[in-house]
Image (cartoon, rainbow, N blue to C red; front, side, top):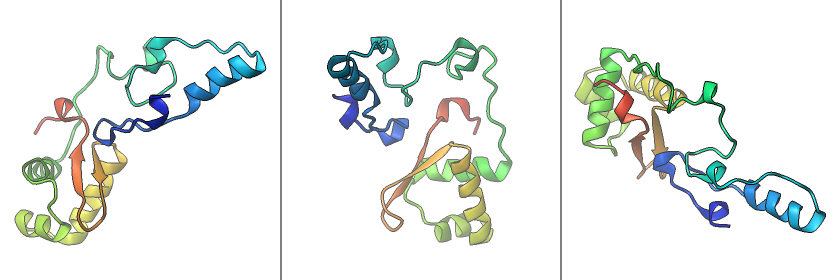
Length: 133
């Protein structure tokens, strides 16, 4: 029940009722869904991960390759996560559309996440240990 209400957007953890639904289906409908505590550890996903697909314990977990501009953008966001696109463009001496495109690419790559509103929100770097700045 805790997982059904728990969010930690900085870690990419979202609430899910999937585990609770399986529990209730077992209890009320007599179904036999396997439910293991190790599956419910907060890792951002519910499904058990096979060893082949586990990106965290992958022995060849290569660092993410970024352009110089992208690394500088991440440095700026690390210093001040609430910078606007206009402010980033001024700091980095490029256009707002370039900043917008870089932010979109980094967000699509799940390297950064926007938390909060468009006006007062901030950017969070998701995988700082694997990014060489």
